[in-house]
Length: 346
Image (cartoon, rainbow, N blue to C red; front, side, top):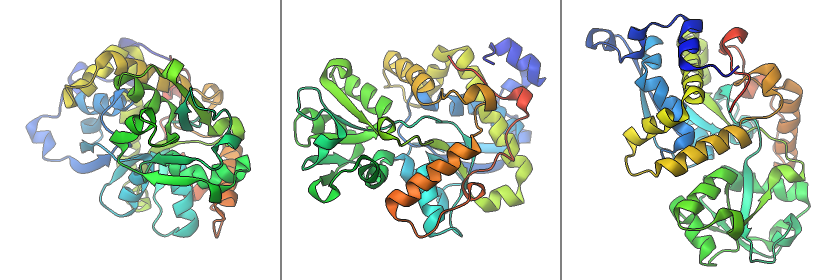
């Protein structure tokens, strides 16, 4: 259920004092953790900042540092390599790592994006109408972009001639300009990331951009979730449960007051366009986190059969050496009680 802030605090038994930052004495006892996001500070990261500002991480005994990221796939590698303790990353990149290096692979403990956001964006004025039209084209994107990492799988599912498609890598902040200027014919990314970044660049995404969405071609995949090392899950399960609960509370606060949530982002990045970031936040809630299964399982959970199918799609399309079990990639062991989960978004 979507709860307002007062009802949410009452339901969790949180006191007004708990919303403040930890006192200096308590802060000395907090465990420092470093989180890397999927991208720059934007509206759809607001729940992490509300969990921080409202003291929910401190309630869980955590002193959380939240850094900007460089792609959803990169977040998985950053956690696997030990540079970060927590990542907001793409579980499909995690599936690939679990298939090739299971001993290094982290695990997802809170699945947030339950609809596939992956796309190739092209100009509406182009003659690229369907996936078939991508054959023989020059496409581009950041090397660590989640959609680009999944493109080999998409070429298999959509029956494309991958050898005929040229890929140009460039920095993520150049994506919309590279498309607008015609230096590439299509760019990889998440639908709402591209849509609102294009809007900030002066484009009208509703009239100037066409999206070739992976989900329209049978890739019914999950996307971003909260990724942690397996060792953390095994050695400090109470802290992990507390961290997940903190983020779940941050989501509830975001739903109760989206404008205040965007203000939390603006405190980290004052130069954001708050109106656009509010639109991006709401679009993400509606388009990337609002799968029908949410009403039954609650945010953070997955449908095991659907997740297993998603693993099979990624493994087969990428010709991976083994098929990981769902339990190697995702666990529901740290989710809040069902009574505290979120079953409805905006």
